[in-house]
Amino acid sequence: MSTKTNLIQGDVQKRIDTWIATYPADQRQSATMPALRIVQEANGGHLTTELMNEIADYLGVAPISVYEVATFYGNYNHQPVGKYQINWCNSVSCFLRGGEALREKMEQKLGVKSGEVTADGKFSIKKVECLGACGGAPMCKIDKTYYENLDETSLFRILDELE
Ligand code: FES
Image 1 (cartoon, rainbow, N blue to C red):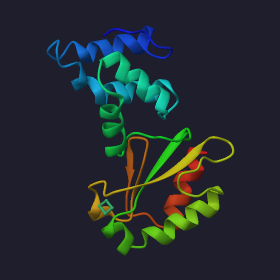
Image 2: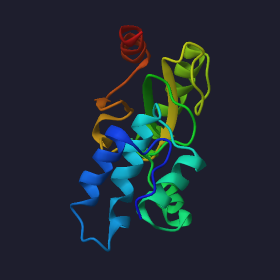
Image 3: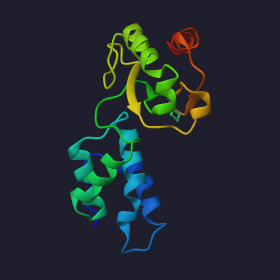
């Protein structure tokens, strides 16, 4: 199926088609994850039901199969995000090393709770499961950069620099 949608056109469509072409013709659904990533990027960092439906339509699969992937993996956002997405590790090593209290201080500093975006659109906070850097707990990932062994001083300095 090659139905054109509002967002899947032009460069977005080309990028998805590049992924589709890497799979056998009868397995367009294999491009679900890259299609979600590309559409999420094109939509400013988050997905909507309408966009997931557009992806399903474009790939020729049932919408539920796209929803399942998009809700299973933590790298897809279902709410608006800030320019800088703070992925805050909420798992046990980080928790035991003060991660929760530090996150609360960060929320106070930024004036938002996890799942929200700051009024200026710069930061959003998302609680995530272990990011595989337990030796550097407590830690977070902001966009693609890992920040480890955080304390209030180092975390606030990082946020101030991004600001
Ligand atoms: S528990 Fe935080 S990185 Fe593993």
